[in-house]
Image (cartoon, rainbow over all chains, first blue to last red; front, side, top):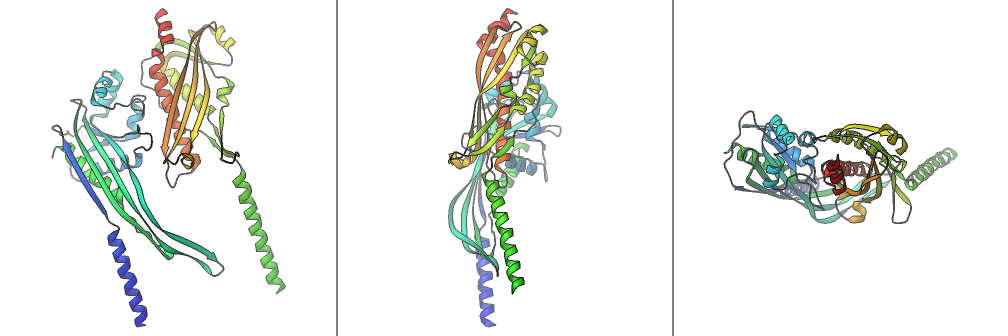
Length: 222
Length: 208
């Protein structure tokens, strides 16, 4: 009985240690280049950059940041990315989207673009660029199945690194008003003793929530 | 004892049938029919009446991707999605658009121009082969514009590119479809914005 209790205690201690270790570190860096502020009738559109050849900013991350900005105190009205891109078609496709504020200035001379921008009430365009990379995979898990049952044994771990930056363009002044960068890292573990127990570090979710909060404050001018 | 043996034989037979079925399924080609919707371009219309001729090489276009062992892996049918795309884009570009069954039919209609697109090349890049976390599709087109009499106006090459990130819960077929839709949108955007900038088309438009 004593032996069983000792093993049980050891198991709980190990589990606690691993769950504590699977947390995320997030760093936010803000660079302000201009004054900001937003009226109640104005909105923000968050767009993912998709020009890079080996990765693209996931639309799920863009959506997550947008949702984060619509929640809580000083919430902001967000225009859904796909709705905006479809309404502006073909001006915000990967090949045609403005890369610099100078390109946006030229684009705004197109009557149809400026008209749609006014219809949506877009005051700021936020360009999100980045991705989450998984590195340092180690360990192994093997699963077996037999007449007596099935089970997995082993231990696996990996590190996730989410790196995103958000450039904020003011549509009224056609200038870049700032950049916010976020870097989140976290170690995930997958111990398996009969059943695998995933202890996942919520790296991208943390990067999203911190970036959304920072962007909301930035746009509100606080 | 005989009952146990009979039960075992039955189970072995079921397992063998399942394994054979799985093996046969794994040998077959995966068919992907590109499906999606396309937004109407927000551009200024040209005051032209254009007849569109879709060559069967375009309407029935299918690309086959072979595995490293040389067997057919994916059969991607994108002909119909191209027709849907042009049916959305062309009416936004020109005042009048009519689809014709042959060049002769278009000549009889007395339109300003006849437009005939065709796919020249199609390439697919899978993450398993490129070791990148994206599915990529690259398509090369030959766009032909003729007068109502069938005489040459312009003949130019246009390329389109689409990619989509690989995701753990998405099937390869769904990822190929998503990359193809991005490539088709790319075609629509570059074609609609660059049409009147093609030198031969520009010269022809100036004569009207």
